[in-house]
Amino acid sequence: MSGFQLMLPPFMACMILVAMLSYLGLHVIAREVIFVDLSLAQMAALGSLSALLFHVDPSSPTTYIFALLATAVGAFLFALTRTSAKTSRVPQEAFIGIVYVVASAAAVLVANKVPGGGEAVEKTLVGSLLWVTWPTILRLAIAYAALGVFHYALRRRFLTISFDPAHAEAQGWKIRLWDFLFYLSFGVVITLAVPIAGVLMVFSFLVVPAVIANLFTADKQRLTFISWGTGALASILGLWLSYTKDLPTGPLIVCMYGVLLVVAAVLRKFGVGDNAVSS
Image (tube, rainbow, N blue to C red; front, side, top):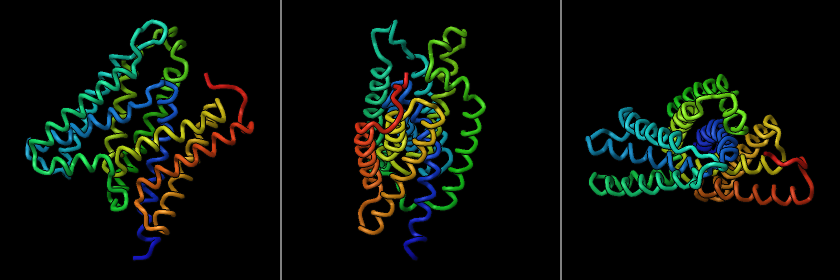
């Protein structure tokens, strides 16, 4: 098998993941819930491990149902614990961290009781990007396309609640209900991404491009394009270096995100980008 044939499936998987995750990352940065993906990923992992208690095949669709149900619980908790900086003594990030820690502890307990539990926990961290298959990529593309249509149809609500929550409150919107829908769809995205890319890569795909974009502009359209472009560039560089230097793919892509963030910070120091700061 040629190098092109070997790296083409991981490349396509990365591009699909970048298209969805880097956009959602803009919402995460605006909402200041940076670790929400780690928390939802851990809930999904707990759901998948719980399926093993019922002797469900890890590759079975039933396992995904368990993961999605656990993610739905996380989405409900995050919608319920939404806080306002002006009225709350406890930031939502604290609740997100608590859910992550409790879900992690529960996952360890469950993994200790099922055969192959330790291997399943490890897979959630590193994923299996190099071994992704075309049928898996096709399913991911279809699912993310559907989720993309969902977010596009509801973009006014989601964007307003993320970027201008005061306006959403003034309009009398049922913000907790919309938050639940947002986090539920977000959880589906994470549940599908983690088995392929692992928690570390998913976090990088989600947060780093959005951070880089916010360094240069506050315009929502340009934020999206910069985020997509940055994610694609980091993935391409990581895959290329992984193949040419025979280095682990996932960690190298994560490191490329770090390098691009440093480059972006330097460019910003030299005055590249808008002067206005995103509110």
